[in-house]
Image (cartoon, rainbow, N blue to C red; front, top):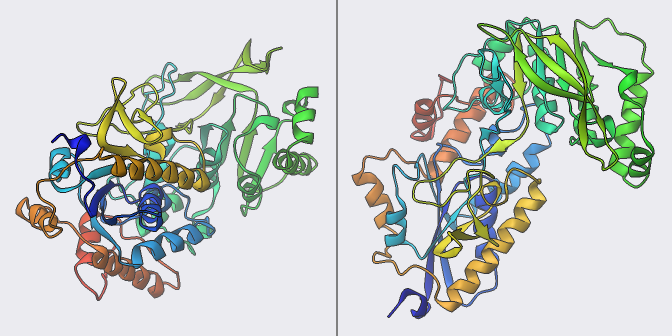
Length: 465
C-alpha cells in the first residue's frame, strides 16, 4: 500500500521545528482544531529557551511584548505540547529521523539573518547587519558578548520598526535601560558608548515610512536625546496628502512629525537625525567605515522612487543596515535563495513544482519577514487546515517508530544536552531571581552553558556568564 493511500491512523504525531510564535501558534491551533483523530506534538527549539524573536528580536524597553510572551507561556504551560530545547535540526535530529517517528513536520524556524544591502563598501569593518546588533543587546547566546560603540557618529539604513529600535538603542543612555532585562555585558557596552549622533536614512519620504506611530512616538520620548529633522524633507505631494487623508496611521505619524518640526533646537547630549529621500550608494572608507555616500531621491509619475543624481557624503564611524531579515536554509529541505523562504503552497512544502509529502511551513520561513503577530496566526491556521486535510486524505508519512519515549532516548543516545519544559521553567526562575536581586523583573542569562546550567536546577543560577 502506498503512503498516499494508507488508512488514517487514530493518533497523529507531528514535529514542529522552531519554538517562536509561529511554531507555538501552529501547535496550539492544531490541538484546538476540529478533527476526528488525536494529535501529539513535539516542539523542537535549537536554543535553550523558547519564544524566538519575541525573546531575541525585540528591544528590551518594549514592555508591551510581555503580553505576547504571557500568551505563549500559557500555551506551553498547559502541558499538552512536549518541548525539546537545545536541539538543532539537521545536526541533533534529522529529517530522516522525523520521517521515522512522526506523521508530519511543520517548519517554523523564522528569519534571523540580515537581508543584504548590495552597495560598494558594505563589508568594511564597522558595517553591520542590524539583526546582529539586536541579537547582541537581547543577549542571544550565539552572538559575541562584546560590542564596541566607539564612533561618535553612526548611521542606520532603513525606515521600519527594526531601524527605529536600533536607532533608539544606539541613542539611549545605558542607565535608562537599567529597569529592563538587559544583561550586565550589554549594559557595560552601552555605558561605554561614545555616540553623540545617530542618523537614520530612508529612501522614501515621511508619508511612506514603514514604522508604526507607537515606535515613532517612543523615539521622541528618549531622555536627553534631541530629534533633528530637515524641513526640506517634509514637502508633501498631492498623492501624499490623499494617502494620509485615508489612513489614520499616516495621520498620526504626520502629526508627530509636525510637532517635532515646531520644536526649538535642543541642548541634549545626543541627537537622533531622521533623513528622508536618501538612497545609500556607497559606504566610504579604506580600512573601516568612514562615511556614507547618499543620493537624493524623488518619486516619479508612476510612484516609483528614483535617484536625482544629487549626492552628498555623511561622516560616520559605524553603519547598521536594517533593510529586512532573511531566513536560513534547512538541511534536506527545499529553499528559495532569492526570496529566503521554503517554497510552499498554503504551507505545503513544494519541491520542483511538486508537493512534498508530510512537510509544511509557517511564519517567516513560509511567507518571508513581513507582517506582525496577526499575520503569523493566520499563517498557522492556513498551514494547519491543509495538514488536517492531508491527514484525512492519507497524504502523510507512515512512521516506523511511533512510541513517544523513543525521541528522548534517541537524543540521549546521541549525547544531545536537551532540556524540556521543566528546564525552561528552571531557567525562567533563575533569570527572575537575578532580576529580583537588582529590583528588576528579569536579567537574561546570556551564555548557552549558563542557560543549560540554570535549566538543571530548580534553585536558579547565581551567574549570568
